[in-house]
Amino acid sequence: MTDNKKEVDVEQVEINDNTTPNIPADADVATDDTKKTISDLQNNVADLTDKYMRAVAELENTRRRAARDMESAARGAGMGIAKKFLPVMDALDAALKQTPDDAGIKSLAMAIESAFAQIGIVKIESVGQPLNPQFHSAISTVPADDAHAADTIFQEMQTGYMYGDVVLRPAMVVVCK
View 1 (cartoon, one colour):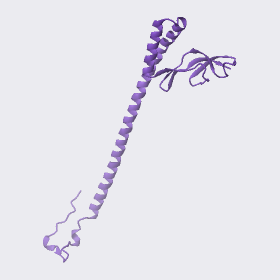
View 2: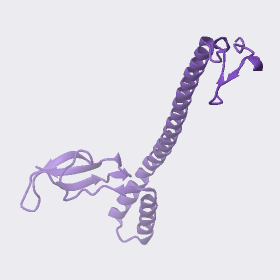
View 3: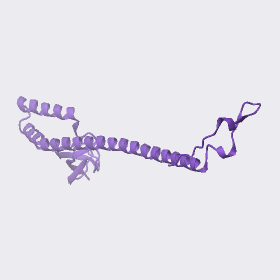
View 4: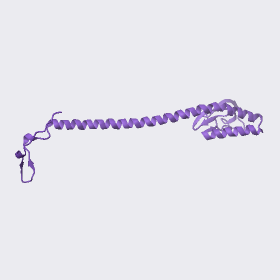
């Protein structure tokens, strides 16, 4: 960049009555090159500001995405562990059906159900409920009677569980038709 300033001799500047200096025409401070340079710099600042704002927005989006991904990974890991404990709960349910008065089995089942509830795993209610394919898997049907309406669940063969708002395993049920 070249220096476009011209030296002005103090004696050449005339002062009029308003005390405003009268600068000679050949001493123009803002030349066309200077105006172009200022315009280029302003455009460059605007461009860099836009790039900065976009980078900040992208960084914030990346942070949000990473937090969502971490939450999803933790939830997936929790669901995987919970699915591994479902057969244990099924075995306890079967043991309770065989010996419903066994205090040890009842205590163990209550402890596991309490632990499930603390981490957000709940049983899907089935018997007497209307069939909902989202939560129930019908494996058999029985004829409807006065006590049981059509399309209601008559019997639960295997308990279904949910983890938060996600079905871990649908309940296997017998439905009245």
